[in-house]
Length: 220
Image (cartoon, rainbow, N blue to C red; front, top):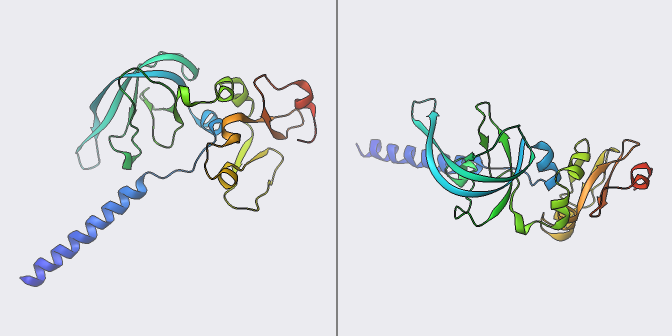
């Protein structure tokens, strides 16, 4: 009997440890430059969150109800997305499943990127670029959507350790992590990776749209 109880306790401990590890690793994503987030997202909006509710969205494979958090939003501007009003966004109920927590007082404006599901709902996760509008730099705001869109055919390569190098003409090297020790450095705040007329890509900084001499130049 003692062996059976101890065996059960060991099994439960292993199961618990596995579930903790599973949840801990469930939400994992690489940092993305704001331009990458814009280009890879189905929806990019500026909005206020005005309410929050937990809703059932179906059942899992075991028949248990699956809940998500529904944020009702007041759309201010759509930079990218379907031809329809977006009145709500959905996310997982806990951060371990990449769920996003947003202010629901209606006082804070956000830039929100997300995916459009087959049912027409917009789903957001911690891996998406979701930033208070007032925390964004003027260049980031002006880059929505024209400048970022101009670079969607480019590839932004994150430098994780030095030395690092480009391997193709359509790449821009993102060095904020190794040079500034955080991802929201100068390149994320002030630069866009723009495709030039010769097919190569290069970082561009400036409030105005890239000029002809920048687009025609052969070397960065």
